[in-house]
Each structure stands twice: as structure tokens, then as C-alpha cells.
Length: 326
Image (cartoon, rainbow, N blue to C red; front, top):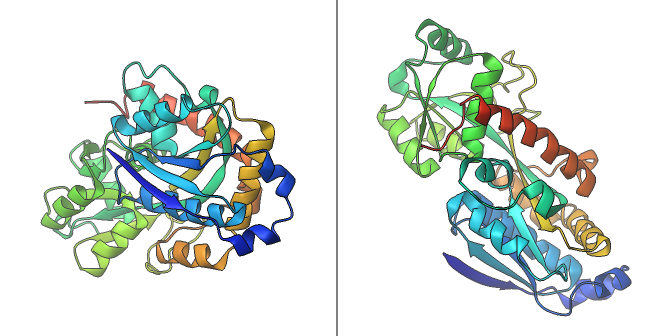
């Protein structure tokens, strides 16, 4: 499915930008950001937000195009095969960039080899919730039940290899549990079944769990991230429940084709950095339970390290059979 939207940079911003020479090295055409999902989901919403603010910072027009399908591989393929002038970027997370190429047959490319990191622009905590029918009211009860009755509890996730599937599989590995994962085609379907008591638990991005808890349809047990989520003040982080080395964070980043120049990548990274200090973007992030990455995690090199680290962990989960294509 393809969808395009133009985002025009503001002239007032353009006149104030001190790095005109760097911007001149970008291609003399409309810039493109590919969102490798259908419109309307979290990846699409965040991709459009960062595209809009980067367009303003660059003083350039950016086209946002949805190229959904094959777990994000079609959008990755379009980016890998884009013109070598550095005018195309890709929005991705760990599911799209790292899991999909391992799970789907014959993609013919690798994110770490065929794409260049620009930087992380947002982090969203994953959250675990139980159905009211399950009787589970805390992480301690969940882990006790999971160990007493291995593989009997069902945990819904939004798609094979999706970021919430990775988060759930990593949690099960970190806590040394046996739980039956139930992949859906989207988070909405898993949350519907959770409310109905069809499944015992669900791992979803925090905004979905917040909405379900507010409606009385789910019992939140724990959230990912460094801090508690404001809308779920009584819900501990996974770290607080005693699960070490489990961040429970879904990150969103921009990647460029491997042939993009150093100058182009540095220019995009600088524009992203400017965007992440803008009040309008931070306000929207706050509404969506999204946080910008810490300064130490911004830019190409931290993303390069994260791709290598998370890629190794996801590869281990796939080889162990924790994540597999049905």
C-alpha cells in the first residue's frame, strides 16, 4: 500500500539555519522518508511527526510515503534501491530492521550492511497487562502462575516479529518463563481478546495498555523504560519487579541507504537533533507516551551500536525458537 504526503519546510526557519553549506550537499530534489507500514499505526504517526519537524529544520520539502507489506521488508527494499544521492530515508524499529529479515525468506539484504544509521528519534515503553478474567493482578502473580503451569498462560502480541513480539519474547527469556505467545495481525485485535478474556495477557505499546486500563478492560502489570509512565503511576517498571537487563523499550530510528554520503547523514542527524529540542514535537511525544532518546543515544554511532547489540539478541531469540514465522 502506498501513500504520499508533502511536508514543506518553513521559509522563516530556513533563513535562520547556520548550516546552509551542509544542506546544499543534499540532492536538489524533494526528499523522501519511507514508512514501511500502512497508515495510522505508531510507526506511521511517529514517522510523520519527525518528517514534519525535520522538514522545518532543513527548510526543504519532504515526501512521506507508506510502503507497507512483508513486515516492513518492502519499504526496506525501496530504501536500499533508492538513488544514491542520499535523498531517501527509512523509518524503522527493531522489529522492522532486525527481526523481519531473519524471519521472512530471502530478503536479499541486511539492515546493518545495506543501510546507514542516522539516529534514534523516539522511544516508546512496552507494557504487559493481564485480562481481568485471568485473576492475575501483579508481575509476581504472573511469574508464579507461569512457573507453576508452564506454557498454559497465553500472551498476545501484535504480529510475528513485531516490536511487541520481540519485547514479549525477550521478557520470557529474561525471566526464564514458559508462556504461549499468540501473534495477532495488530495490537487492536490482541487488546480486544484481552478484554474478552480470550487470552490471559498481552504485550503492547504503553498507549494501548493505558487506554485499556482506563476503560477497565485490562490490569497493567509492568512497563518498560527507565521511569514509570505518568498515566500508570502505580505500575512498576520491569526493572522494579526484579527483571534485570530488560529495557522493554521499542525504539524508532531513521536509516539511510548505505551509499548515502557522510555529509548527508551528518546533515540529517543534525536536523533530527534540532527537531528533538522543539517544543511542538516534544508536546506531541508527551501525548503519545514517547520520549526522545538521551543525548548519549542520539546520532549515527549510538544507533550503530544498538543495531549490533539488539541484532545479536534477536538472532539468539530466533535461533532458540522464541520467535518464529508460523
